[in-house]
Image (cartoon, rainbow, N blue to C red; front, side):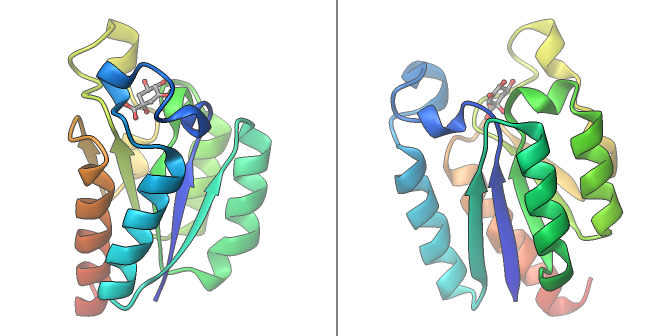
Length: 146
Ligand code: DQA
């Protein structure tokens, strides 16, 4: 089983950026924790981060045919990234949307996700552990054939 773990704009700054909101862990640390959990679940994790919507779409188009599911934190593209939403939807793969912060407890504009309607589900506000829960749920659902 192959799961894409995709991080959108500014998430390369994890561990440096607004740590009180996004936590202390760097992207590399989060990546390695997700890969470790993936290995325990027999899932290969392919991770990718970009600050550009086009690069995220290129990655999704290139990798989707050999993947079984997608975990994505789209960063601010969550709120307006319609091309990203189309690319995710076109894969027909199960997509789990993850946010480190609780997007419903912050500025009003963050409470709208254009990705959520095409996602299998969303985890918001549980920090880096949200990615761990996402891979557990996705891998188990894929194993069960759901
Ligand atoms: C975020 C929430 C977004 O509103 C924000 O633009 C981010 C990170 C989160 O993980 O909480 O970049 O997706």
